[in-house]
Image (cartoon, rainbow, N blue to C red; front, side, top):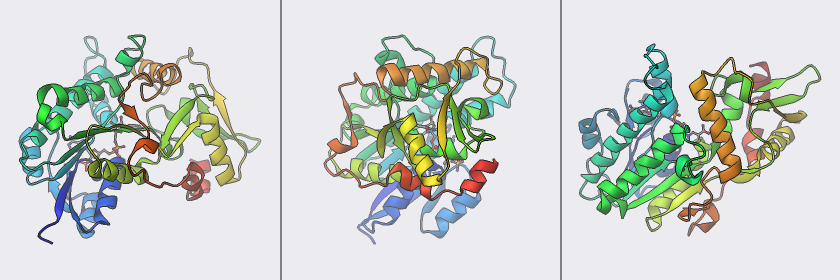
Length: 339
Ligand SMILES: NC(=O)c1ccc[n+]([C@@H]2O[C@H](COP(=O)([O-])OP(=O)(O)OC[C@H]3O[C@@H](n4cnc5c(N)ncnc54)[C@H](OP(=O)(O)O)[C@@H]3O)[C@@H](O)[C@H]2O)c1
């Protein structure tokens, strides 16, 4: 349709972006352009088959983003700290001057600046939604300064305001809560087996092993399902929102209880000592993760003293989302317990 609006989605093949794609594909008032580095990947081809205009671009290359963002009415931007870290780790970089996680964060910040700069040049842009996280250094009053996958995203949000005030007036921030899928799908994800996996012990109890305290409230999101409904609300509502996005505000123990109900398998949190070395985490990431968990507990995942943060209930039209238990009920538990 000629009068359709265009949303351009970075990370269209990933958790957050794919959810944005899925939500906007269902609305005939919108057409969807999805960005990938590799249009011939299976995921990118599947997007094309579903009517997404797939465009090749790379966040390292601002000119490719400028082409990809052309004619957009709305742009959703997400960056991939862990992908950058993983790629650097394979390069055997010299880390004597700078730890890999700081280097990854700096690359992530530059990629986000590239996307922000490219979007600022789009004449008809109405809404810019940036996937970000809270500023740990600032909201912990400099108690925790090594949580780069949060801080560098927060610096990118600040950059929109500082460098592009006109674009800032069209911007809303999307802070994704903790992903539920990390806890059930990613045994090799960064906290890896020693700190955050599920393993069934000899008594048949599912142990969620973590160094995070189990009884403070956290924002939990099914990023691959919930991001789209939240981003649509942010696109349709007035700009200027800084949303902490979640389907449930619950403790780790409550999340595990939801898993127990869904799996009908006794499930427990096992809080492991933080001061022991972690064979699965290099020291830079152990510090990053440890400080992150302490920050969540003491200062709030979203930076609870940040007066700009809004919760889903404060949206004009909060999306209706499933519960954590409904999310877990869809899982193949035999696969999880045999992992
Ligand atoms: N795990 C959690 O609990 C949690 C919570 C909040 C926020 N986060 C943040 O979520 C982010 C990852 O988001 P996600 O899980 O939605 O992504 P994801 O599923 O890991 O996928 C990464 C996406 O980024 C795209 N991408 C990566 N590098 C790119 C580049 N240079 N240029 C263009 N596109 C690029 C990939 O596209 P192609 O491969 O197709 O090019 C892919 O679509 C991380 O930064 C993390 O810090 C995670």
